[in-house]
Image (cartoon, rainbow, N blue to C red; front, side):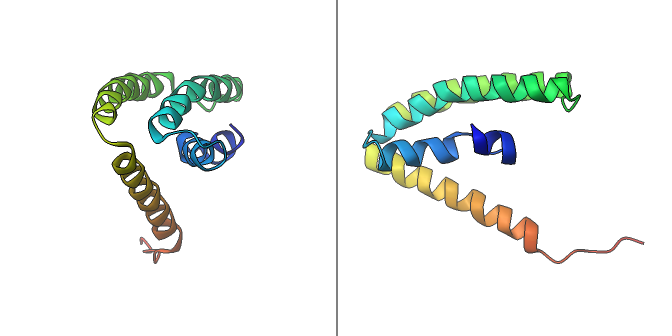
Length: 113
């Protein structure tokens, strides 16, 4: 919740590895648990951001509907994948997000004008 509110990262990037490594949960259970936890994290963050007028409700609705549809489809696909493979795919996704974030921070800035 802390990282989701502070950095805007989905809790899954922190929750899934933590529950697998620290609590010993299987990958499928960790991902399912993360999806439930995100409901509470997102609700708390939304309340704070609404209060501070940092939400565009129309855009949030579009992203939310897409997120629900994606979660339903992705969950069904994940259930058909062996746990070790799912862990590997998740690890590559986290690595991709990290590299993309670092690239955006350190890429050369193009001046306009």
